[in-house]
Image 1 (tube, one colour):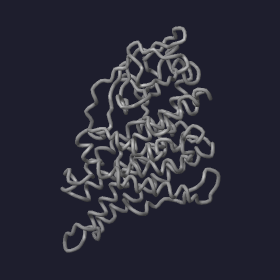
Image 2 (cartoon, helix red, strand yellow):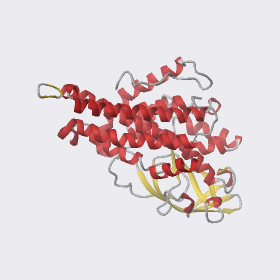
Image 3 (cartoon, helix red, strand yellow):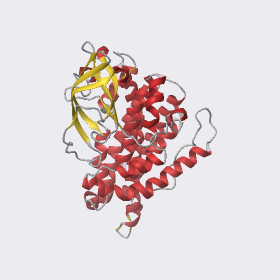
Amino acid sequence: MPVDRMFPPLLTATGPQPNTDATDLIDLVRDLAATSLMPKAAAAEEAKKFPAEAFATIGRAGLLGLPFPEQYGGGAQPYEIYLQALEELSAAWLTVGLGVSVHTLSAFPLWHFGTEAQRTQWLPDMVGGTQLGGFMLSEFDAGSDVAALQTRAVRDGDTYVINGSKAWITHAGVANFYALMARTGEAGPKGISCFLLPATTSGIEVLAPERKMGLNASPTCAMNLHDVRLPANHLIGVEGQGMAIALAALNSGRMGIAACATGLAQAALDHAVAYAKERAQFGKPIIAHQGVAFMLADMAAAIGSARAAYLDAARRYDAGRDFATAAAIAKLTATDAAMKVTTDAVQVLGGAGYTMDHPVERYLREAKVTQIFEGTNQIQRLIIARSL
């Protein structure tokens, strides 16, 4: 792990003065990631083993509740700081960094749209470090077109009865709770509502994990809901508000994915630079050859741009300004950069980069999905274009 990530000055939530506590937090996350996460990543990904112990470790360190208010057991950190911590985790092990981002996304609806009674009852456990969340939005026929989802929740007295299927659920089968979007009304976006679904609820069926090209330690599964009965007080917001809640959560989650992708790209650059300093051809290290040096320089520039983009979005969010377009720009910029940087990292290593003896081939496989989840990059371009 590099000592200097070229971070801009760490800011407080309210002003431009450097925050020593925030600097210490990022240093702590970097050290924890280097010692507890990075050494285990390759073996766990190859074995397709979910890193429950890693999440327990970062949970004890308070990293599963960084952006949530102190009154609910969170770390009360601005998104600017939370995202930099997320980058550090992802640079060590993307499965873990992504897991924290998905967890934050899953608790977002309750945090921002729940009643005070709901937040007081459930949020401390959700963000206290012992639980992990999942986000149940996509369906096989409702991916980018989420308004077409068909999973239905029918009111029955003091409960809702839910039936349907969900697809591509990160943490399926290992999460403790899910933010669930289901249809309570008419077709289209106005008929969707949001629910808090405990994983212990009867009627949840987790299907076999998807066979993926990367992130194999992170389970991604379809889930069936068979007459799942939820108390009515598990409705978040009001009926028909689910689409707005989902989109608000996704806007925040895109900043998380941007930070994760930036961390992954940084890890690829770090490894490529180290290799280029040691590998000699034609009598000198390959980093001394302009063709390789310029490639590395372009990789560094892409990472710096990605980091600046997600920090810009975070600062807008922290200031209470509109951040949706900035989040889309950050997600698009950072994930496209991650794909390019990891591809070039393999190229710098040549034949060695194509083998599992080095992590860059895994980084390349993992980078691809960052261009897909939390809204494909084509959707991000649509969001940005509409804002123009």
